[in-house]
Amino acid sequence: MIWNPNKECMPLEQMRTLQGKRLHKIVSYVYHNVPFYRNKLQEMDITPDDITSIDDIVKLPYTTKQDLRDNYPFGLQAAPQSEIIRIHASSGTTGNPTIVGYSRKDIGVWSECMARCLTAYGITRDDTMSIAYGYGLFTGGLGAHYGVETLGAAAVPVSTGNTEKHIRLLKDLGVTGIACTPSYALHLAETMEKLGIDKSTLKLRSGAFGAEPWTENMRHEIEERLGLKAYNLYGLSEIMGPCVSYECSEQSGSHVNEDHFFPEIIDPDTLEPLPLGQTGELVFTTLTKEGMPLLRYRTRDLCCLYREECACGRTSVKMGRILGRTDDMLIIRGINVFPSQVESVILSMPECAPRYLLVVDRVNNLDTLTVQVEVRQEYFAQGFDTFEPIFKLERDLAAKLRSVLSINAKVEVKQPGTLERSMGKSKFVIDKRQLK
Ligand code: DLL
Image 1 (cartoon, rainbow, N blue to C red):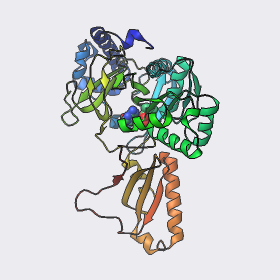
Image 2: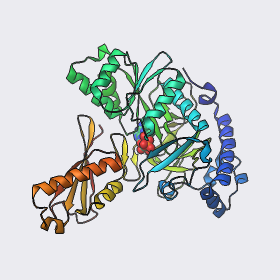
Image 3: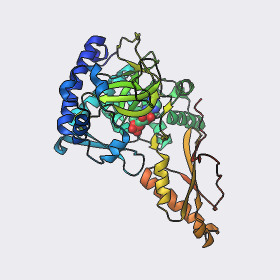
Protein backbone atom coordinates (compact mmCIF):
# COMPACT_ATOMS: atom_id res chain seq x y z
CA MET A 1 0.00 0.00 0.00
CA ILE A 2 1.14 3.52 -0.77
CA TRP A 3 -0.41 6.46 1.12
CA ASN A 4 -0.03 9.11 -1.60
CA PRO A 5 0.89 7.44 -4.93
CA ASN A 6 0.58 10.77 -6.78
CA LYS A 7 3.54 12.14 -4.88
CA GLU A 8 5.44 9.03 -3.80
CA CYS A 9 5.45 7.52 -7.32
CA MET A 10 5.72 10.73 -9.34
CA PRO A 11 7.91 10.42 -12.47
CA LEU A 12 11.28 12.12 -11.96
CA GLU A 13 10.82 14.97 -14.46
CA GLN A 14 7.44 15.87 -13.03
CA MET A 15 8.92 15.81 -9.50
CA ARG A 16 11.74 18.13 -10.54
CA THR A 17 9.27 20.57 -12.05
CA LEU A 18 7.23 20.55 -8.86
CA GLN A 19 10.37 21.01 -6.75
CA GLY A 20 11.50 23.92 -8.95
CA LYS A 21 8.16 25.70 -8.55
CA ARG A 22 8.15 25.13 -4.80
CA LEU A 23 11.75 26.28 -4.47
CA HIS A 24 11.01 29.55 -6.25
CA LYS A 25 8.03 30.09 -3.97
CA ILE A 26 9.89 29.32 -0.73
CA VAL A 27 12.86 31.56 -1.67
CA SER A 28 10.46 34.38 -2.41
CA TYR A 29 8.66 33.71 0.89
CA VAL A 30 11.82 33.82 3.04
CA TYR A 31 13.15 36.81 1.06
CA HIS A 32 10.11 38.80 2.07
CA ASN A 33 9.63 37.44 5.58
CA VAL A 34 13.01 36.57 7.11
CA PRO A 35 15.54 39.44 7.33
CA PHE A 36 18.34 36.90 7.90
CA TYR A 37 17.72 35.32 4.48
CA ARG A 38 17.00 38.62 2.73
CA ASN A 39 20.38 39.96 3.90
CA LYS A 40 22.19 36.78 2.88
CA LEU A 41 20.59 36.71 -0.57
CA GLN A 42 21.21 40.42 -1.12
CA GLU A 43 24.86 39.97 -0.13
CA MET A 44 25.10 37.25 -2.79
CA ASP A 45 23.21 39.42 -5.28
CA ILE A 46 20.41 36.88 -5.66
CA THR A 47 16.71 37.66 -5.98
CA PRO A 48 13.86 35.12 -5.95
CA ASP A 49 13.56 35.56 -9.73
CA ASP A 50 17.00 34.01 -10.16
CA ILE A 51 15.53 30.72 -8.91
CA THR A 52 13.56 29.20 -11.76
CA SER A 53 14.31 25.48 -11.49
CA ILE A 54 15.49 23.02 -8.86
CA ASP A 55 18.98 23.12 -10.42
CA ASP A 56 19.25 26.72 -9.17
CA ILE A 57 19.39 25.44 -5.59
CA VAL A 58 23.21 25.49 -5.78
CA LYS A 59 23.07 29.30 -5.94
CA LEU A 60 21.52 29.50 -2.47
CA PRO A 61 23.37 29.97 0.83
CA TYR A 62 23.70 27.24 3.43
CA THR A 63 22.07 27.45 6.86
CA THR A 64 23.79 26.04 9.98
CA LYS A 65 22.83 25.24 13.56
CA GLN A 66 24.95 28.25 14.52
CA ASP A 67 22.63 30.46 12.43
CA LEU A 68 19.67 29.09 14.41
CA ARG A 69 21.52 29.81 17.64
CA ASP A 70 22.46 33.34 16.59
CA ASN A 71 18.83 34.06 15.75
CA TYR A 72 17.37 32.47 18.91
CA PRO A 73 14.49 32.07 19.52
CA PHE A 74 12.32 33.28 16.62
CA GLY A 75 14.71 35.07 14.25
CA LEU A 76 14.32 32.52 11.45
CA GLN A 77 10.58 32.20 11.81
CA ALA A 78 8.84 33.31 8.63
CA ALA A 79 5.18 33.09 9.68
CA PRO A 80 3.67 35.64 12.08
CA GLN A 81 3.26 34.37 15.64
CA SER A 82 -0.53 34.23 15.18
CA GLU A 83 -0.04 31.47 12.57
CA ILE A 84 2.13 29.27 14.82
CA ILE A 85 0.23 26.45 16.54
CA ARG A 86 3.06 24.26 17.90
CA ILE A 87 6.63 24.77 19.10
CA HIS A 88 9.27 22.06 19.55
CA ALA A 89 12.87 22.39 20.70
CA SER A 90 16.03 20.37 20.25
CA SER A 91 19.57 20.61 21.61
CA GLY A 92 21.76 23.51 20.62
CA THR A 93 25.54 23.18 20.78
CA THR A 94 25.74 25.26 23.95
CA GLY A 95 23.26 27.34 25.85
CA ASN A 96 20.24 28.03 23.71
CA PRO A 97 18.15 25.18 22.38
CA THR A 98 16.96 25.22 18.77
CA ILE A 99 13.35 26.38 18.57
CA VAL A 100 11.05 25.27 15.74
CA GLY A 101 7.58 26.76 15.24
CA TYR A 102 4.96 25.02 13.08
CA SER A 103 1.92 26.48 11.33
CA ARG A 104 -1.29 24.50 10.98
CA LYS A 105 -0.32 23.64 7.42
CA ASP A 106 3.10 22.41 8.64
CA ILE A 107 1.46 20.05 11.13
CA GLY A 108 -0.74 18.79 8.28
CA VAL A 109 2.28 18.15 6.01
CA TRP A 110 4.14 16.46 8.88
CA SER A 111 1.16 14.20 9.66
CA GLU A 112 0.73 13.29 5.98
CA CYS A 113 4.45 12.52 5.57
CA MET A 114 4.38 10.41 8.73
CA ALA A 115 1.28 8.56 7.42
CA ARG A 116 3.27 7.83 4.24
CA CYS A 117 6.04 6.28 6.39
CA LEU A 118 3.65 4.15 8.45
CA THR A 119 1.85 2.91 5.33
CA ALA A 120 5.22 1.87 3.89
CA TYR A 121 5.78 -0.11 7.11
CA GLY A 122 2.55 -1.99 6.43
CA ILE A 123 0.50 -0.21 9.09
CA THR A 124 -3.21 0.25 8.28
CA ARG A 125 -6.26 1.64 10.07
CA ASP A 126 -6.80 -1.81 11.59
CA ASP A 127 -3.56 -1.56 13.55
CA THR A 128 -2.88 -0.43 17.11
CA MET A 129 0.44 1.32 17.51
CA SER A 130 2.26 2.05 20.74
CA ILE A 131 4.42 5.16 20.61
CA ALA A 132 7.39 4.95 22.95
CA TYR A 133 9.29 7.99 21.72
CA GLY A 134 9.34 10.80 24.27
CA TYR A 135 6.33 13.13 24.19
CA GLY A 136 7.21 16.75 24.84
CA LEU A 137 9.66 19.16 23.25
CA PHE A 138 11.24 16.19 21.39
CA THR A 139 9.53 15.70 18.03
CA GLY A 140 9.44 11.87 18.21
CA GLY A 141 6.32 11.31 20.33
CA LEU A 142 3.88 13.86 18.92
CA GLY A 143 5.26 13.47 15.38
CA ALA A 144 4.59 9.73 15.28
CA HIS A 145 1.29 10.20 17.14
CA TYR A 146 -0.22 12.57 14.57
CA GLY A 147 0.86 10.25 11.77
CA VAL A 148 -0.86 7.27 13.38
CA GLU A 149 -4.07 9.28 13.87
CA THR A 150 -3.97 10.68 10.32
CA LEU A 151 -3.64 7.15 9.00
CA GLY A 152 -6.58 6.06 11.12
CA ALA A 153 -4.77 3.44 13.21
CA ALA A 154 -5.13 3.60 17.02
CA ALA A 155 -2.33 5.46 18.82
CA VAL A 156 -1.27 4.33 22.31
CA PRO A 157 0.85 7.20 23.68
CA VAL A 158 2.99 5.25 26.17
CA SER A 159 5.99 7.61 25.84
CA THR A 160 9.30 6.57 27.43
CA GLY A 161 10.05 4.72 30.67
CA ASN A 162 8.01 2.16 32.58
CA THR A 163 8.91 -0.77 30.39
CA GLU A 164 6.99 -3.40 32.36
CA LYS A 165 3.72 -1.47 32.10
CA HIS A 166 4.38 -1.02 28.40
CA ILE A 167 4.83 -4.77 27.90
CA ARG A 168 1.58 -5.40 29.69
CA LEU A 169 -0.21 -2.95 27.37
CA LEU A 170 1.37 -4.58 24.31
CA LYS A 171 -0.11 -7.86 25.46
CA ASP A 172 -3.51 -6.74 26.75
CA LEU A 173 -4.31 -4.38 23.85
CA GLY A 174 -2.99 -6.70 21.14
CA VAL A 175 -0.66 -3.94 19.94
CA THR A 176 0.56 -4.64 16.38
CA GLY A 177 2.94 -1.74 15.72
CA ILE A 178 5.57 0.00 17.80
CA ALA A 179 7.53 3.24 17.38
CA CYS A 180 10.64 3.77 19.52
CA THR A 181 14.42 4.02 19.33
CA PRO A 182 16.12 0.80 18.15
CA SER A 183 18.06 0.53 21.42
CA TYR A 184 14.83 0.78 23.39
CA ALA A 185 13.33 -1.98 21.23
CA LEU A 186 16.21 -4.23 22.29
CA HIS A 187 15.75 -3.20 25.92
CA LEU A 188 12.07 -4.09 25.62
CA ALA A 189 12.99 -7.52 24.21
CA GLU A 190 15.42 -8.10 27.03
CA THR A 191 12.89 -7.10 29.69
CA MET A 192 10.32 -9.44 28.13
CA GLU A 193 12.79 -12.29 28.28
CA LYS A 194 13.54 -11.53 31.94
CA LEU A 195 9.83 -11.52 32.74
CA GLY A 196 9.43 -14.82 30.91
CA ILE A 197 7.09 -13.35 28.29
CA ASP A 198 7.40 -15.07 24.95
CA LYS A 199 7.11 -12.98 21.77
CA SER A 200 4.48 -15.42 20.48
CA THR A 201 2.05 -14.09 23.14
CA LEU A 202 2.27 -10.62 21.49
CA LYS A 203 0.83 -9.52 18.15
CA LEU A 204 3.63 -7.12 17.16
CA ARG A 205 4.38 -7.20 13.44
CA SER A 206 5.91 -3.85 12.46
CA GLY A 207 8.20 -1.27 14.08
CA ALA A 208 9.22 2.32 13.23
CA PHE A 209 12.72 2.78 14.60
CA GLY A 210 14.92 5.86 14.47
CA ALA A 211 16.21 8.99 16.23
CA GLU A 212 19.65 7.38 16.63
CA PRO A 213 22.11 5.41 14.47
CA TRP A 214 21.59 1.64 14.17
CA THR A 215 22.86 -1.21 12.04
CA GLU A 216 21.69 -4.21 9.98
CA ASN A 217 22.76 -6.50 12.81
CA MET A 218 20.57 -4.60 15.23
CA ARG A 219 17.71 -4.89 12.76
CA HIS A 220 18.06 -8.68 12.63
CA GLU A 221 18.27 -8.90 16.40
CA ILE A 222 15.17 -6.72 16.94
CA GLU A 223 13.20 -8.65 14.32
CA GLU A 224 14.20 -11.97 15.81
CA ARG A 225 13.59 -11.07 19.45
CA LEU A 226 10.33 -9.11 19.02
CA GLY A 227 8.91 -11.10 16.09
CA LEU A 228 8.29 -8.10 13.82
CA LYS A 229 9.66 -6.32 10.74
CA ALA A 230 11.91 -3.44 11.78
CA TYR A 231 11.94 -0.33 9.56
CA ASN A 232 14.15 2.72 9.59
CA LEU A 233 12.62 6.13 10.24
CA TYR A 234 14.74 9.27 9.85
CA GLY A 235 14.16 12.93 10.57
CA LEU A 236 15.36 15.97 12.43
CA SER A 237 13.56 18.73 14.31
CA GLU A 238 14.96 21.62 12.28
CA ILE A 239 13.44 20.20 9.09
CA MET A 240 10.24 18.74 10.64
CA GLY A 241 10.78 15.75 12.96
CA PRO A 242 10.35 12.03 12.20
CA CYS A 243 9.03 11.59 8.61
CA VAL A 244 11.79 13.06 6.46
CA SER A 245 12.64 9.59 5.06
CA TYR A 246 11.40 6.04 5.56
CA GLU A 247 12.09 2.49 4.48
CA CYS A 248 9.61 0.48 2.44
CA SER A 249 8.95 -3.29 2.27
CA GLU A 250 12.32 -3.69 0.52
CA GLN A 251 14.16 -2.52 3.68
CA SER A 252 17.04 -1.24 1.57
CA GLY A 253 17.54 2.50 1.92
CA SER A 254 14.99 5.14 2.89
CA HIS A 255 12.72 7.04 0.50
CA VAL A 256 12.92 10.78 1.06
CA ASN A 257 9.68 12.78 1.07
CA GLU A 258 11.36 14.90 -1.59
CA ASP A 259 8.28 16.88 -2.61
CA HIS A 260 8.61 18.57 0.81
CA PHE A 261 12.28 18.13 1.83
CA PHE A 262 14.84 18.49 -0.97
CA PRO A 263 18.04 16.58 -0.15
CA GLU A 264 21.60 17.22 -1.34
CA ILE A 265 24.95 15.71 -0.41
CA ILE A 266 27.93 18.03 -0.06
CA ASP A 267 31.59 17.70 0.73
CA PRO A 268 31.70 19.00 4.33
CA ASP A 269 35.12 20.59 3.77
CA THR A 270 34.77 22.29 0.39
CA LEU A 271 30.94 22.62 0.63
CA GLU A 272 30.76 21.53 -3.03
CA PRO A 273 27.71 19.40 -3.98
CA LEU A 274 28.56 15.74 -4.58
CA PRO A 275 26.95 13.46 -7.20
CA LEU A 276 24.47 10.70 -6.31
CA GLY A 277 26.16 7.66 -4.81
CA GLN A 278 28.92 9.54 -3.00
CA THR A 279 29.03 9.80 0.79
CA GLY A 280 29.06 13.27 2.29
CA GLU A 281 27.06 15.62 4.49
CA LEU A 282 23.30 15.59 4.05
CA VAL A 283 21.67 18.97 3.41
CA PHE A 284 17.93 19.69 3.29
CA THR A 285 15.82 22.53 1.95
CA THR A 286 12.23 22.65 3.15
CA LEU A 287 10.11 23.24 0.03
CA THR A 288 6.72 23.89 1.64
CA LYS A 289 7.26 24.88 5.26
CA GLU A 290 5.56 28.01 6.59
CA GLY A 291 6.66 28.28 10.24
CA MET A 292 10.44 28.06 9.94
CA PRO A 293 11.48 27.26 6.37
CA LEU A 294 15.21 26.55 5.95
CA LEU A 295 17.39 26.82 2.85
CA ARG A 296 20.12 24.20 2.47
CA TYR A 297 20.29 23.27 6.15
CA ARG A 298 23.49 21.37 6.98
CA THR A 299 22.38 18.36 9.03
CA ARG A 300 25.95 17.24 9.90
CA ASP A 301 24.77 13.67 9.16
CA LEU A 302 26.97 11.65 6.83
CA CYS A 303 25.29 9.41 4.26
CA CYS A 304 24.69 9.00 0.52
CA LEU A 305 21.74 9.50 -1.81
CA TYR A 306 20.86 7.29 -4.77
CA ARG A 307 18.10 6.61 -7.25
CA GLU A 308 17.07 3.11 -8.19
CA GLU A 309 13.98 1.39 -9.42
CA CYS A 310 12.42 0.23 -6.19
CA ALA A 311 10.25 -2.89 -6.22
CA CYS A 312 7.75 -1.08 -3.97
CA GLY A 313 6.86 1.26 -6.84
CA ARG A 314 7.98 4.48 -5.18
CA THR A 315 10.17 6.67 -7.38
CA SER A 316 11.58 8.99 -4.72
CA VAL A 317 15.31 9.36 -4.13
CA LYS A 318 16.70 7.07 -1.41
CA MET A 319 19.22 7.72 1.35
CA GLY A 320 21.49 5.14 2.94
CA ARG A 321 21.96 4.67 6.67
CA ILE A 322 23.53 7.52 8.63
CA LEU A 323 27.21 6.61 8.84
CA GLY A 324 28.33 9.24 11.32
CA ARG A 325 28.40 12.96 11.94
CA THR A 326 30.70 15.77 10.97
CA ASP A 327 30.42 17.31 14.44
CA ASP A 328 30.80 15.90 17.94
CA MET A 329 27.09 15.51 18.75
CA LEU A 330 26.30 12.38 20.76
CA ILE A 331 22.88 10.73 20.79
CA ILE A 332 22.24 9.30 24.25
CA ARG A 333 18.95 7.44 24.60
CA GLY A 334 17.67 9.37 21.60
CA ILE A 335 18.58 12.73 23.18
CA ASN A 336 21.06 14.88 21.30
CA VAL A 337 23.91 15.95 23.55
CA PHE A 338 26.83 18.18 22.63
CA PRO A 339 29.91 17.81 24.89
CA SER A 340 30.05 21.62 24.94
CA GLN A 341 26.66 21.73 26.67
CA VAL A 342 27.87 19.38 29.40
CA GLU A 343 30.97 21.51 29.74
CA SER A 344 28.98 24.68 30.26
CA VAL A 345 26.95 23.00 33.02
CA ILE A 346 30.17 21.77 34.67
CA LEU A 347 31.74 25.21 34.48
CA SER A 348 28.68 26.81 36.04
CA MET A 349 29.65 25.02 39.28
CA PRO A 350 32.50 26.98 40.91
CA GLU A 351 33.88 23.83 42.59
CA CYS A 352 34.54 22.08 39.25
CA ALA A 353 37.77 22.43 37.28
CA PRO A 354 37.55 22.59 33.46
CA ARG A 355 38.90 19.02 33.39
CA TYR A 356 36.32 16.46 32.53
CA LEU A 357 35.71 13.23 30.64
CA LEU A 358 32.39 11.94 29.30
CA VAL A 359 32.19 8.15 29.14
CA VAL A 360 29.29 6.83 27.07
CA ASP A 361 28.43 3.14 27.15
CA ARG A 362 25.53 0.79 26.43
CA VAL A 363 24.46 -1.47 29.30
CA ASN A 364 21.49 -3.83 28.81
CA ASN A 365 20.82 -2.02 25.52
CA LEU A 366 20.38 1.31 27.29
CA ASP A 367 22.87 4.13 26.87
CA THR A 368 24.69 5.33 29.99
CA LEU A 369 26.65 8.53 30.50
CA THR A 370 29.27 8.95 33.20
CA VAL A 371 30.68 12.42 33.75
CA GLN A 372 34.07 12.42 35.44
CA VAL A 373 35.21 15.82 36.62
CA GLU A 374 38.04 17.14 38.74
CA VAL A 375 37.41 19.37 41.74
CA ARG A 376 39.38 22.64 41.72
CA GLN A 377 42.59 22.65 43.76
CA GLU A 378 41.45 25.49 46.03
CA TYR A 379 38.23 23.65 46.96
CA PHE A 380 40.13 20.42 47.43
CA ALA A 381 42.39 22.21 49.90
CA GLN A 382 39.34 23.50 51.78
CA GLY A 383 37.59 20.32 52.83
CA PHE A 384 36.79 18.67 49.50
CA ASP A 385 39.21 15.92 50.42
CA THR A 386 36.44 14.28 52.47
CA PHE A 387 33.52 12.22 51.20
CA GLU A 388 30.52 14.32 52.20
CA PRO A 389 31.17 17.49 50.11
CA ILE A 390 32.25 15.33 47.18
CA PHE A 391 29.03 13.30 47.31
CA LYS A 392 26.99 16.49 47.54
CA LEU A 393 28.78 17.97 44.54
CA GLU A 394 28.13 14.76 42.58
CA ARG A 395 24.42 14.92 43.46
CA ASP A 396 24.16 18.64 42.64
CA LEU A 397 25.91 18.30 39.30
CA ALA A 398 23.77 15.29 38.33
CA ALA A 399 20.62 17.26 39.22
CA LYS A 400 21.76 20.23 37.16
CA LEU A 401 22.57 18.05 34.14
CA ARG A 402 19.10 16.54 34.45
CA SER A 403 17.32 19.89 34.66
CA VAL A 404 19.36 21.71 32.00
CA LEU A 405 19.97 18.92 29.47
CA SER A 406 17.27 16.35 30.37
CA ILE A 407 19.90 13.64 30.66
CA ASN A 408 20.54 11.27 33.52
CA ALA A 409 24.26 11.05 34.12
CA LYS A 410 26.33 9.37 36.77
CA VAL A 411 28.76 11.96 38.13
CA GLU A 412 32.17 11.03 39.53
CA VAL A 413 34.08 13.88 41.15
CA LYS A 414 37.85 13.25 41.10
CA GLN A 415 40.81 14.72 42.95
CA PRO A 416 42.78 17.46 41.16
CA GLY A 417 45.25 16.06 38.63
CA THR A 418 43.73 12.56 38.41
CA LEU A 419 42.13 12.65 34.96
CA GLU A 420 44.57 11.59 32.31
CA ARG A 421 46.39 14.43 30.51
CA SER A 422 47.16 13.85 26.91
CA MET A 423 50.13 15.23 25.04
CA GLY A 424 48.12 16.32 22.05
CA LYS A 425 44.47 17.23 21.78
CA SER A 426 42.65 16.53 25.05
CA LYS A 427 40.15 13.74 24.86
CA PHE A 428 36.82 14.79 26.38
CA VAL A 429 34.65 11.90 25.24
CA ILE A 430 35.08 8.13 25.25
CA ASP A 431 32.24 6.39 23.44
CA LYS A 432 32.41 2.69 24.26
CA ARG A 433 29.21 1.82 22.41
CA GLN A 434 29.96 -0.52 19.59
CA LEU A 435 27.09 -0.71 17.15
CA LYS A 436 27.59 -4.15 15.67
O1 DLL B 1 15.53 12.48 16.32
C1 DLL B 1 13.57 13.05 15.04
C2 DLL B 1 13.16 11.63 15.04
C3 DLL B 1 12.34 11.15 16.03
C4 DLL B 1 13.56 10.77 14.01
C5 DLL B 1 11.90 9.82 16.02
C6 DLL B 1 13.14 9.45 13.98
C7 DLL B 1 12.32 8.97 14.96
P1 DLL B 1 16.37 15.35 16.53
O2 DLL B 1 16.22 15.15 17.99
O3 DLL B 1 16.42 16.75 16.01
O4 DLL B 1 15.20 14.68 15.75
O5 DLL B 1 17.69 14.57 16.08
C8 DLL B 1 18.04 14.51 14.72
O6 DLL B 1 19.09 12.35 15.06
O7 DLL B 1 20.33 14.59 12.58
C9 DLL B 1 20.48 12.21 13.17
O8 DLL B 1 21.80 12.49 13.60
C10 DLL B 1 19.77 11.40 14.26
N1 DLL B 1 18.80 10.46 13.66
C11 DLL B 1 17.47 10.62 13.54
N2 DLL B 1 16.91 9.52 12.94
C12 DLL B 1 17.94 8.68 12.66
C13 DLL B 1 18.04 7.38 12.05
C14 DLL B 1 14.87 13.34 15.77
N3 DLL B 1 16.98 6.72 11.59
C15 DLL B 1 19.30 13.67 14.55
N4 DLL B 1 19.28 6.85 11.92
C16 DLL B 1 19.65 13.47 13.11
C17 DLL B 1 20.39 7.48 12.37
C18 DLL B 1 19.14 9.28 13.12
N5 DLL B 1 20.34 8.69 12.97
